[in-house]
Image (cartoon, rainbow, N blue to C red; front, side, top):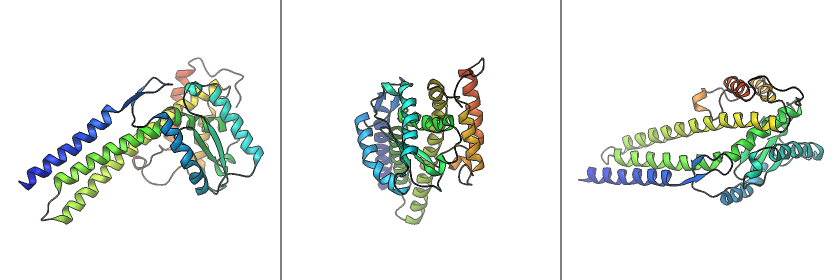
Length: 270
């Protein structure tokens, strides 16, 4: 009887998680895509603004070089004004972080975009910087953080249901092991979603950079820079939220070919 009750509870937990996920749908105002998200754009903006100071502190705060910061602002806003980002409910702010050693760029939900001085000093052209910022703008426009949160809540709910169903009061150690396995599976699933978001943001960067007057092939150069700098941690790609830079080059080349079947126009800034 106790076993039957566990299965019933597990089914209820799993059903609630699935219903909550699939019933929370919103249409992206820029892409028109129907997405499974459970927060409003206003909540995304508030979350990003609240988290921004703490994230900056983790990288040594903001960089004191005001000229470099102004350059990041100028190129970032140029990308926003020339793309569909102007139709979004987000207010984009671009931040240069003081960390000279870490090579990184990221975006918080709602439009807070960051790039480290460590990455900036490795970039050689405006187009390369535009590619990096365009990629991060793509994450914001794609509402990837909100999607990730909803997916994480779904997989955690399903993992919890699995742990309830397999719980054995006579073998609590085995139940712990089963719960750990379920949690690991949930993590890998979410990481896979993360890699798909990265590739989508790469494709967005191609469109945004070209619309702003930059040669989108600069994004390929960024991937080559990341490769030379080590690119990512040495673990296997399926356990990384960022695809290998070498693999991303192929995606970028295909996207550029689709956008410009007759070749990239001359006159675009490198």
